Image (cartoon, rainbow, N blue to C red; front, side, top):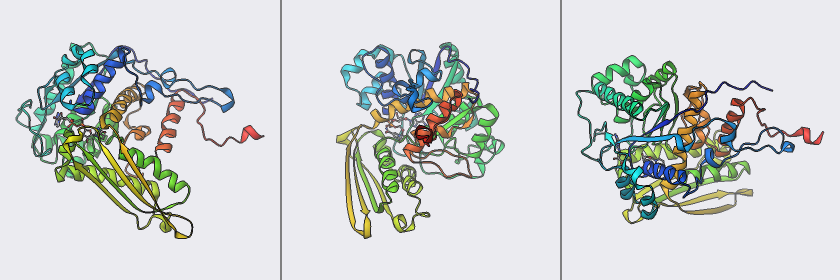
Length: 437
Ligand SMILES: NC(=O)c1ccc[n+]([C@@H]2O[C@H](COP(=O)([O-])OP(=O)(O)OC[C@H]3O[C@@H](n4cnc5c(N)ncnc54)[C@H](O)[C@@H]3O)[C@@H](O)[C@H]2O)c1
């Protein structure tokens, strides 16, 4: 048997810091509070409901994941966060309009206690937003020190043992790596110089990582996925995950596309469009924020279908992604996919998918799982990019010399094998010859 990895126990309280108390964050927090009270179920969460098979199929061992690896229990989670609006978590959840008021009332006192700390915010990076609850420091270095102070205060006030941070803020404008992102020194100089290459999200990420705190990015903007912050994470032993939660349409895409490729069915075109009416939809209505999202959504098919290996099937694939801001629908997104397929002898076929989903209902269990798994990674001394958490993201962060793995089923296998590896259990290869020997 392989040797298990030493994992520190999940003793004491875990502080979960969410940047941005919008639809995703409030749905996560209110959900955890409701589940804690026994009035709702954690559907969609692998850490709460998932199992992992250990050993041979004949052994009948499929314990719950939470019984295999030491995870923080929901009762030990304490939430805090930042937002540019002053609304407490109850008011913010009402504004988001995802969870029905009757359920929110049952957790209202606890939600009201969560009041956002003033945010690091610059309208340059999120054009459609503006709010009053914003820090006013001299430069971005001072802002980062303020965030560090918030983190330390939150830890001390709540007697927390450990912390994680997840960016659930709005999608920032499209940015690419530049010189300021290459080394820790260059990055710190850029913070002091108020360099525009450093968006607000990077200020938070820097603060968390410098403190050795696990950090995840739920949105598609460039944050911790730059060499300077990866280098800092190696130094401070902070685990990293991201980016852009894989929820509605992209989740379905990464379920369907591997199946089509497995059967060597060609795809000539994949047209995805959706309507969305929440604040995220409003922010994405700005072309610069949409560009960030579009890049994240579009890369998926190329990596899954591998046109370089299958030119006859996927070389001329036309992939179009549209998001339309349509307020009447609120958080209840409706997505349409039209897939133009090609079968035997080149005969065309079509597949249509109409997904009436709820964006934040799909996102909340992911935020919870990512927070708990990142804390596990930290206690298992696994730092830097946690590729085994790709399962949760549209644009998985990855080592520079690798392509990202997008296939949901390979991602799940990788995640579960990582849990087996941590516990010193045999990895499952699905070869299975021994059953027939
Ligand atoms: N819901 C999903 O299914 C899903 C899936 C993938 C990614 N995402 C991403 O997650 C993020 C959150 O989504 P949402 O639906 O909760 O959006 P939202 O607009 O409801 O919430 C975002 C919150 O972040 C706040 N904010 C923006 N910039 C900030 C800053 N610099 N500091 C502190 N707070 C800031 C906003 O005021 C807002 O309250 C978005 O970037 C979205 O694209 C969501």
